[in-house]
Image 1 (cartoon, helix red, strand yellow):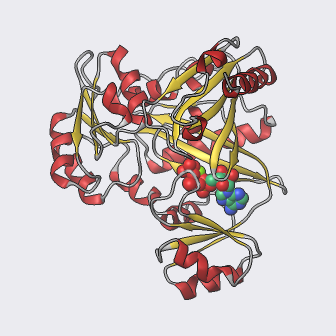
Image 2 (cartoon, rainbow, N blue to C red; image 1 turned 180 degrees about the vertical axis):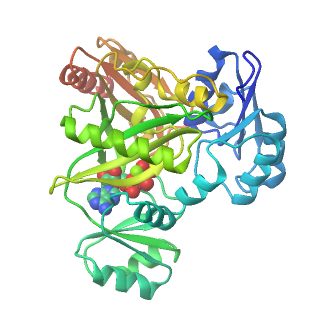
Image 3 (cartoon, rainbow, N blue to C red; image 1 turned 180 degrees about the horizontal axis):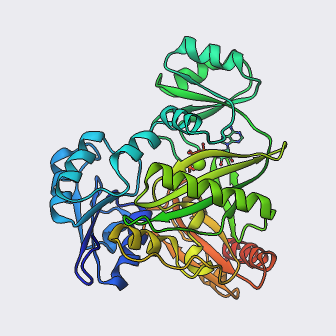
Length: 379
Ligand code: ATP
Ligand code: MG
């Protein structure tokens, strides 16, 4: 059931930064990583053992990936079902295709969560402009209209404040199936990572507290510093979800704390997640190592907190006239670490992240802000 150490091969659909960091975590265990990505120069290309260049609906390439691997997984959600099935012909797919099918469609995901008794906010599905109008009318304004398929980092979603905006939202999203969510008053946001091995061993990381701006994660801290009741609830949700879904691999649950004290599920991700990029510094086992262990059928690592760490994403906007920010100044701040993905810097594009460790979360955050300021100062 477990992969041969050393020498076993993980096949990943997707070669973005998550694939890159997975490959980096697989190396010390003697495991090889092959990725499938439409871009030969994808972020994972520099570290993976091999890149199969193919689209995420390219059945032949996905089949080749499965044939060359001992286990197959995915680091992005928009994989065509036929490609997923083709990859699974050659090697076990973890997490299974049924899980991705539920998660990759926001409406299906919400239906599944509701029917299994998990707490989510008010929402409606819409598959045409009239349904969208009705859904917006039925909901208290403002609301969030999100394409059912394919959005990330707040893309393919819109804030709608009046009923009249529904039509414009339908057009702006390209006339595709979507969900309408009530905009909630958030007290806090957190996420929780759970890993489950094919043998059923399950380990949960401490929840991370997250802050978003324009739909993009801007800061995250471990530990969360949230009330014990909130973190216990998040951990219980993650445990229940991983068990009910039969996850083999990792699952991240994004949660909203709302004013009446409830903890609601925003969405699920069946893969490593941006909000745990600092887990390798903060915890005994980082998310990528945990993911590799779970995929490979190895014993899961301890998730104990080792030290507080704060995280900031680095976007392509930081580059001025093609010139990178002064990373060396950031690195001069104690406890700071830098991870770059080797991606071409473009506005709003995540190209790396900065982390700062401290004796406390407050110190970690203070160091992080200091490093970010220093980095941006003009030479
Ligand atoms: P990613 O895949 O990067 O997590 P996404 O594109 O799937 O992002 P969401 O997770 O749906 O986007 O939303 C991004 C952020 O926008 C949330 O973390 C939250 O801060 C805010 N947000 C989304 N939906 C709501 C809502 N219904 N009420 C209040 N805030 C919301
Ligand atoms: Mg999200």
